Length: 115
Length: 116
Image 1 (cartoon, helix red, strand yellow):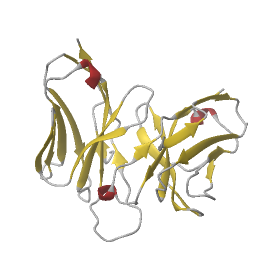
Image 2 (image 1 turned 120 degrees about the vertical axis):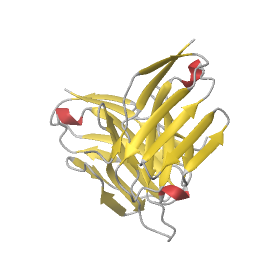
Image 3 (image 1 turned 45 degrees about the vertical axis):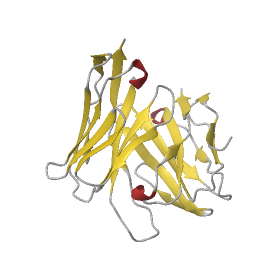
Image 4 (image 1 turned 90 degrees about the horizontal axis):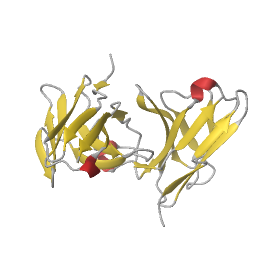
């Protein structure tokens, strides 16, 4: 089925380890996003990508790295995980970068715990 | 002060009640308004959107925007247990030229529980 899939859905890691969260979409949407969702903060944008090889920072990019070599994939890497990065991470995609042009389609989330 | 304020709840109502969910905002550039619904352990999904003041209906759901007061609402009529979820308001600018990213700002979400 077409859609946006994230993996892993659940991950427990230790402080200092590298973690990569995967995101794959089958709609050929130009824009892809990574959000984190925390109690009291709602959804905060980490990074976004307008197309393959084009990425840009969001509100909370520190400690994260992204790449987008193919339109359909947008992995998020925590190079050295910290406890403050314990969160639920959502990948999303949309046809264009403008809210009026279409909805954001979200994956089911990756729940990350950093011990 | 956050650009978008939303009461996190939780809000608990009996089945069949009318539910009112609200957000206020401070940024006048926000002209496009959305409501997302998020079930537990799932990603948000778009429920309604509007870019004009007034009401927009879709079945049991009505989205209301008052730009003069910078206040938006989502009403749910005849609420059902299946409506139990977190409702996030979201908003962004309304831009007609092509290209470029326009940020969507989300509220923190209101958790709703409809009791059978």
